[in-house]
Image (cartoon, rainbow, N blue to C red):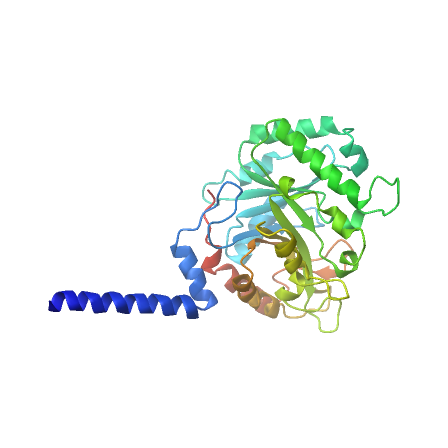
Length: 348
């Protein structure tokens, strides 16, 4: 009887402790619990728990992207589960370097390929089948590659919209281009491509009447993505933290970007396909506050299943530093973030 009673008490105590832990777990404890659960990726590369960690490095430089990513991984202290690359038009990909990076057993990675398929033409032309030869050539390469990978068609389309009838680059033309491309890939038997539509999420574009017309449809979109950044200089454009880049919205009480995605496209996993904190080149400011804010936001926003940092010493206009090591304090904070077990997701 005493033995049975003791077992009962111990069991109830353990259950109580477990319940309390579930209620009061800190972000660090939650991350540890996720890691202990053995997080892995499923059919659409969505992690069963935790968050996929990724990177793109060497942007707007002549450095080979694979070597740049390896250097970034060494600096950050973690292998990027997602290796982000960029292509346009008829460029053949996956490239030899990309294939080698995703065949490195000691450093498991999956590709995230951005493709401006309409390069040299228009979205409307692609939708009409005028670039089917280009699509079919890619389909053959994708099937030959064999491994699952993410594909973004024309990331940040807002910036390329020409809102004029007959331009071939209207928002509805983007949606039609996207649908045609994915449907043709499927018809060619491509089953290893995971489709991502990646927005800028800028309040200027979200306020446009055509913004809603960009979405291609849930049946051809696997993940909803966001490319967004914040300034670490007080008073400078888009100063804020990780929440700020997720919640931008048009004036007038509309939904912020994250709430739009989870409300209008509920059930779709979200990828922050590009993110980072920046200061103007030559105006060094500590980025720690941005990096330190990430974990709390991931805990509050369970739809986010992947984050991919974009690292460069200067952006496309040459005036913003988005690197993780612009100061010692910034790098230390980023390394602390990267080390969190919430990112311990095994690629399935």
